[in-house]
Length: 330
Image (cartoon, rainbow, N blue to C red; front, side, top):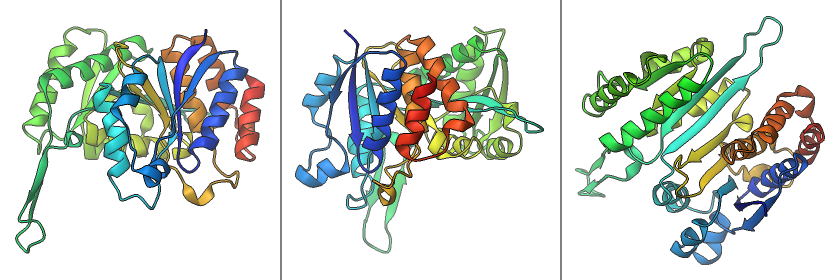
C-alpha cells in the first residue's frame, strides 16, 4: 500500500503541472494511492460547490494533499480563496506555511538557501472585521489582525526547531513592531521567550520593509525567517522573485503533529491564458511534490527530485518535456 494522497488538479494549468509532479514521484520509485477531487473555480461555476464538509471528513483519512492551482477569472475574487484555500488551512489546522528558496552558486554569482516560515491560520487572514454604513459616503471598513499566544508560539517554536536543525542555525523574526505595537509586541516577546530554549540558534530582528530590501540586495544573509500571515505572504512572493521566479516556487502547508493531512502546492496561479500551450513550467509543482515526500519521510526520493530540478538542463522545453527531463534524472 502506498501513501494515500488527495490530488486536487484545480483550474487552468493546475492539472497539467500536477500530472508532471505525479510522473516524477513515480519515477523516483514511490507508490501513491491517489484520490482525485474536482474542486476549484470551474467546479464552482458548474454547481456552486467549493469545499463540502463531507470532503473534509474524507481527507482526515489521507496522508497528504497535493494541489495544482485554483481560480478562474469568471469567479469573483475571494470566493475560492476563502471558501477553499483558507477553509483548508483553518479546518485542517495547517498552521505552518513553509517555503524554501534555493538557488545554486555559479561563477561569480553567490547563491542562497533560506526558508520562510509563515504563520498560516491567524493574523489579517482570520476574517475579523466588517463594514459600517457600506455604500455611503461615510463608509467605514475595518480589517483586524488576530494573534494568539498559542498560535504565535507554536509557529515560532517550529521555526526555531527548523533553524536548530540547519547548518547555519540562524533565525530572523520579521514584523513591524514600531507601528503594530500590540501584535508586534506579542510576536517579539514570544520570540525572545522561546529563544531561551535554543541557545545554539543565533537570532535577529528585521522590520518587514527592511527585510524586503535585504532579500533583494543580500538574500544570503538569511537562513530561516519567521513571520506572520500577511508579511509572510508578501515576503514569500518576493523570495520567489529573487530565486528564479514564481514558476520555481514550491510550498507546504503543514500540520506538524500530523493530526490532519498537510497540503503541498506550487505558489503560482492557474494562468488560464497559457492552458494547453505547453508553456507552464511544472518545476514548482514537482518541488512541492518533493516537499510532500520529505514530510512523508521519503527523504531519499525527495532529495533525488530536488537535485534533478536544480539541473539547468531540465529547464527547457514544454511542460511535458521538462517533466520528462526531471523524471529521467531521478
